[in-house]
Image (tube, rainbow, N blue to C red):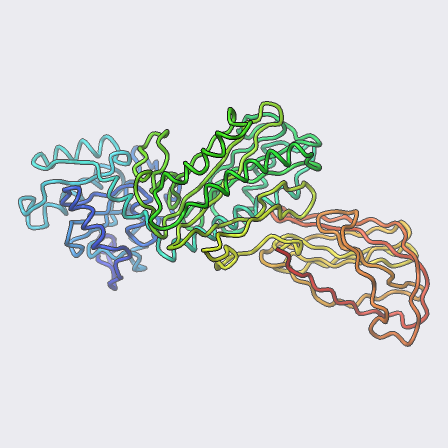
Length: 570
């Protein structure tokens, strides 16, 4: 088969059209547009049902030009649609990735892409057959391509079609909501892992690098991270070093198959004092107030009204800001709610619709304590709202498993935990290395075994100054424990097992079984003694460890079988 025939052949099998053609036709009719020429990556992805060419996932430049995908759609006639792509997209066409009846995967830059688009339009019974007004994406059509299009079609009016395309995407499908839920959950999980492993002496650049690894390790594409530390309000990654007592903010976007999770959470290297608790509490109250009006049929501006009422009554009003905006394939898409941005607040006086997704964010730039912010993602439902990634909303302590404060969803909406693909961060240290250290005697050396996929590790640490170490294995998912027999010498009782997620000092204590498995009637006794535990994570994956101690004597079988289940906490 020749290269040309591969490049220009039609898909081997018809695919269903992945969007609501009737809705798009109605929007185009309202705008007076006869045909669409779509060139932005996000709208091409939407109209092709999630397809995004891997070769140009982020870069666009190639040779002396750039990648320019073109999707042509004629109002009321989806059978006339065509996709014009880069020459390497011929391989994607062979795999049947495109629903459009015509596929031309043979371009190398902007000019040949527009030439093929004009050729296709001319072949639709001639441009005199009802195509007089062509909608383009003015912000996403290069100057040379725009000039070539206008020169080739002097009898057509070229208008901006950004608005009808945005309205088409405003109401999310169930599949889109699931991707936004997954993106939000995983971004927050990644932030909590970074807070847990942050320490004095690290730089802001190192925090962002760690967050990038965490997000990528959870299947996201890292987009960005705005970060602050201490009372410095600068949000750019830098060589600023963290100090004990610093507050931290992480505001990050990570996308799941194109859909963005954009949230902000707070951390601290130490314990928050009463003032910090009050300040974050004030921010949280504004966030919760902004959620309350959200429901199908509510006016978009009610979100701002609810938040601004609290801000005006606050002693911090001079340095507190609030904004709400739509989320989806891009940030700040419909619904347009803010009146103070480059776009108009089109939806401020219009009714919210079910399955719209809104980001709400409250920012406090405290002149003395620093940058304090929460950003949440909320989906509109028929009778309320549903929050995505709604954990870790309090002060997340460095060096500890972070869950922070989580608010329940609206009574009128389902819990965010019901979302598929959710992996909650808990004291079970899901997706983070978990380590057990069980006290032995006689200064016995500790050991550890990494458990695949869960990052769980079990180890035995010596008593009376013994030490243990563990390495969290790579992998993702809920951490789970398993039974492991521990062979202890005579005179080596199990007296106490201490569990302390994210800490070497111990947080919870569980007594040893009164009769270990396999004991021959022997008594177990003893007292606790000092011991330490260490944990080191595989790069890009979190790990945690905790110490345990024990000393004493026992009469009975030297073999103990211990099973410990890590329970989920919410």
